[in-house]
Structures are given as C-alpha cells and as structure tokens.
Length: 404
Image 1 (tube, rainbow, N blue to C red):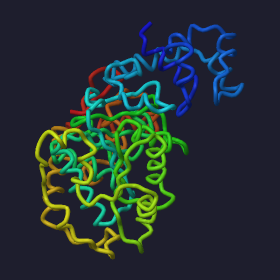
Image 2 (tube, rainbow, N blue to C red):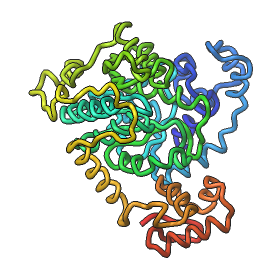
Image 3 (cartoon, one colour):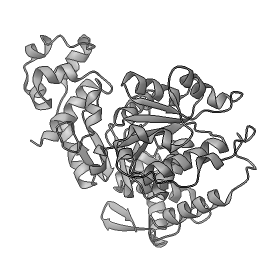
C-alpha cells in the first residue's frame, strides 16, 4: 500500500485542525496508528479526543482513501504528507498541522526559505490595495514567497502582485480542488498553479463549511515565518489569522490605517498589542536572512502612495498609470491561460460558463461536472457540446473532457 494512503486515512479518521503530535509521538506515523490494536489506541489517552473521536479512529474504513489517492494521481494533484521532503517544515511546529496536503502546481516551493503570509479585507480601500501591491512587489524582488488565501480583495491583490513581480505565490484553499467555490477567481487560481502552488488539506470536491476558513487560516500562518496584515476589521477572518500567527509564535506585521475606518480597527488594535507597523518592505526584510546577503531591491517607493481617507468605495475610484499597467498585465496572463480569449457571459451561455469554471480547476469527468454543477444531465451535455463547438474544450474519452 502507498504510504500516502495511510496519511489520508488518518486525516479522515481524526478530522481537521486536531492536535496530532501526541498521537504520532506514540505510534510513530500514520501506518503505525493504522496497525495499532484497538486496546493500544484506547490506552493512549489522547488529549482532546473524546470517546467518539477515539471510536472514529478505530472504526474508520481505509477503502475509500484508495479511490481518493487514485483520483489525485489521475488528475495530477500531488499528495504531500508530513514524512515528505516537500512538506512545509514550519507547519510541523504547530500542534494541529494537516496530515495531508493536496497540491496543484510547484510543490517544491512549499519549503521556501523565506515565506510570508499577506492577508486583509475582502473589501479593501484603494490605499490598502496600492500599499499591498507595492510591498508584495518589493518582497518578491527580494526572493520572498507570498502565501495567502485566494479570497477577493487583499488576498487577490497579493497573489496577482507576486505573479506580476516574477515571484512565487501559494494559495491556501478552504475547500477541495474542483469544489467550484468562488468561480470569479478561477483564472487567478489557474495562474497561481502556474507561478507557485494551490494547496488544501481538504479532499477533492469538498465544499466550504462554516469552519473551513478558520482551519485554513492556521495553515497560512503556520507555513510562514511571519504574516502581514494589510487591512483588517476587528472581528474579521483576517483578525482570526492574526490570532493564529500570534499563538504559533510568528512575526506579525501590520499596515497602519485610518483610525476613523472600521476596515482598520483590527489592524490598529494589533499594533497597540505589539505587532510591528509596516511602512515599507524595508520594515519586513530584516526578518529574512536574505536581507544580510544583498542590497535591497526596490520598486515604486511606498512613500509615494497617497493616503485617501475617503477612498473606501471602489465605485468611481481614479486609476493611476500604475494600476492601469497592472490590469493590462493581469488581463494578458488570464488570456494566456488557454489558447482562447477569456470566457465571458457574452461569449457563451450561462450553463457553459458554469461548466467552464468547473473544468478550469482540472476536473473534467462528465459525472463529476454534473455533480458539481447541480445542472440537469442534458444541460451539462449541451454545455459541453457548446464548449467543444467553440474550440474551448475537447472530448478525450467517452466520459472525459479537457480545456484546450
């Protein structure tokens, strides 16, 4: 049996975000837990595991994990486990590290010497966006890996700025590959897979739940040496990631903001509690060893960004030459993801657009598309025919399609 299957089984048996260190200290690895007797598991007195949790470890069937393993191998989803050379070593420092990571893209970048989380509001101000773009660009030019969560707003700016700057970026998902969550960022995820990696601890097709994002947030902070908070309200998910970072002993950097804005209430509070205020990438790079080895590589000076206290609404905000240039770069990257132009509601039907967005994550079996789309079978088949006739997709077997 492949060793990864034991880790998949154990992750399914214990669940997510559980303390697994004592379990592994006792039994060595996932295979050791699987081969342990029922009495040995009961006698382990696992901290945080009630009677039901212990029973699940004992009763969990391994058979379905063969199917997950085979599915991932067919669809080029890499399974990275704690005993792999490519597993992010910093994650092993936290108590509740994931027992398996499903990775698309360059899994070799997960152990970058200098990795930094960059997160913030889903509805950022113009100031927050431009500051994030500048800081991330400077960090990438100084060989820092950018890690974020792929959400709208600051996360998206961070990933795109890393790509524009020629850097590497990792997107940590709160769902499984192929779940169809946040289809408007499908092109971004595809681009990240080409310039870094998409990772998740959730098996393929796992949908988002109420607890998905807090669980994901511990990975963003856990696999980095520090986290930059670009813009955070007091009770936001961003604020929760900051708390994970503090608990994990990570450096916390915060962009100060307008004291009258709720978008910065959490950010400014973190500064009063001891987080380091950031005014340029120079305030962050001393944390990275590379700062001692070569001169700081700068881009557009952060100090030239104008703070606009009234610019929190996106509607009507003025584009600068820099932001227009960035939008052109991103548009070109999105068009280069396939041989065709970017798909829009004006060029294909709504059903075809739904099917296209599902296929863009690399999941192409017809039955999988039907299940994920919630469309009637005839509508899915019609949409696939439409995509095929437009040269957007092609049929490669009786029940499988791929994008051109």
